[in-house]
Length: 400
Image (cartoon, rainbow, N blue to C red; front, side, top):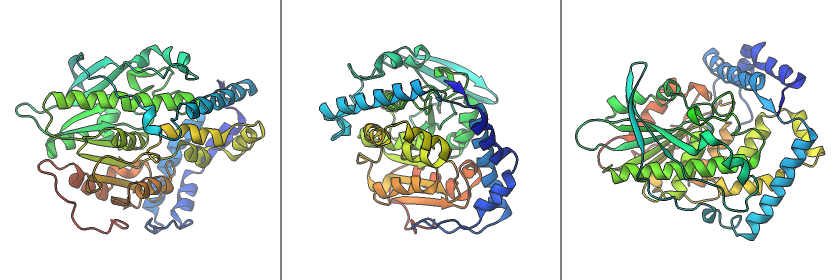
């Protein structure tokens, strides 16, 4: 992998040199999508959009991209071989069959930890996941030693069992303080009265294989992305089963961004979730690449014959859009920002439509502004409230 060069530095200037101008531009009315509320341009909205731009800039300045022709060719050949294999084994036609049921989790390692002002339990266990025999990229995946151990952080109430929420972090998360802040874990634990489990995704936090949490997850090796998603839901299913075996009366899944994608995939594979919340979700990795990658890089990749159609077929085995959710319709929830620059509104819209238009909260903000959005807080109260499950209140799913 080579360091991003001149095009990366120039692209980063869009955020580091003129973030407010870009924020103001994106705060103006854009091409209107059906079912996405129309935004009113304000300075506050511009500031929220500028925050997305700054985040994007850090990815460009610090990221690495495959620039060599040999890497593009190797990746393309690997993808074509995988598509042929997946077609022969029937996984493209039936993506559910790609996912093996994991064994019950019986042995864990646990310790009590203070991080900042939050005391929590750290749980780790041997993941046990491996790509199917014969899959391209299998040997490379098994060489990622740190990734073989799964991790979760728990906030548990003493006394009788409480409902659990399993939180699935987004891209670049994985550090306790980042995760506790991003999920408002103390609010979930203390105000809503929930037990909270925050999982660590493959390649993140103590599982990282690069300099930064998340390096390698969305780096151009699409077989690694497939295996990361397959392992993520494998580990989450083992964690959910372990919590249930300990007496959890109910378990909801709540994911953010990449974690929203993963929670939606989990909801298609895990039959006994009581609710699922997809927050600022991605729903199509290839669509995200086309939205965020420089147009010049995409044109070069196409000229070099990079197989985008094959990638789309390949990613279908880990896509929440190719499998029906098993969570009841009334217990599916989505929230998204109508000015999101990192996971644009069409990503949430695609998942919402696939889920047959359940309760959705659109807020006038960006990807990173969800933390301060009252509509998000209200939806989470509704989705994750303890006690007997009931129908959501009657709301306008398009505007709330």
